[in-house]
Image 1 (cartoon, rainbow, N blue to C red):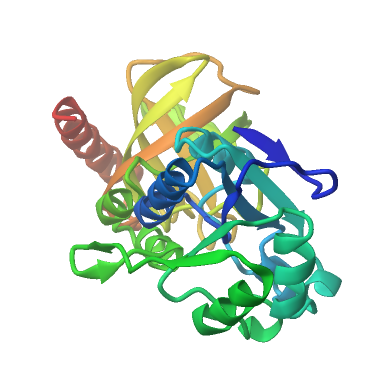
Image 2: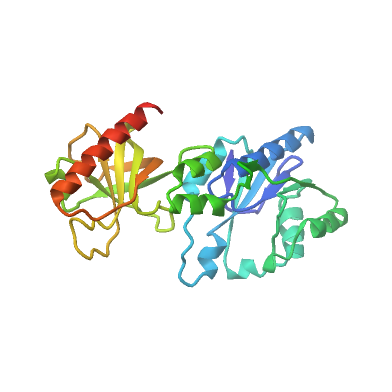
Length: 310
């Protein structure tokens, strides 16, 4: 797969194109990409996926509250596995947002990419105020001599798969459903920074993670069964996300702490990738450190048993 950050000088063979954010590159997206590749093969052409960066909500929401399933680097890696020939990343800003759907089709899809077939989802809208839809695309396709193919919704467990549904599932702790929708185990990466060392005093040393990409979606508070990738090796682990109410009263700083099973060594500065498999309980305040330690022992036993089955 070739990646482009400019649309100047493109020269594709009978390009079959789809357009969208593709956040998370989930099962629904994979169905679109599968069809895209099939159309490209049938038309003796090349598959082209057009996306935008940053996410439009990062531009228009004043509090920048959007949290994404994938960073751009993660998205590229996921798309590389999908068989796409070309991935175009268009720079999104307020000026770009004011482009009408007609101008987008004419100036970008037709003139720059030279689209031959456009593949769109069942509810695809685009252009300023999302005015473009399948019917309007069909009209423009006749004018500019390209075909439009419309796909139905991909249904999993009687729900339409969407990035927003997956985000909600992750935020509320329904990790297994989110992973089902994604088609892979949700993960995020962070660097180990120095913590308070409270976990080590209880026999559970933790790696405190700093997430560089502030827009990356992190699961809600609670205790999770995870797998940890570090230095190319995989480990089992238990993760707590929250405010450590038993240890620190009125703590306002949310932390991400990972205890890697059967490892007790200095991990400061290491980059860890955390694969989130299951939320096992909510975070809670215990009456004493000993009570917390007892619960951690139970958590570890449950997580070891759970992870041995995967």
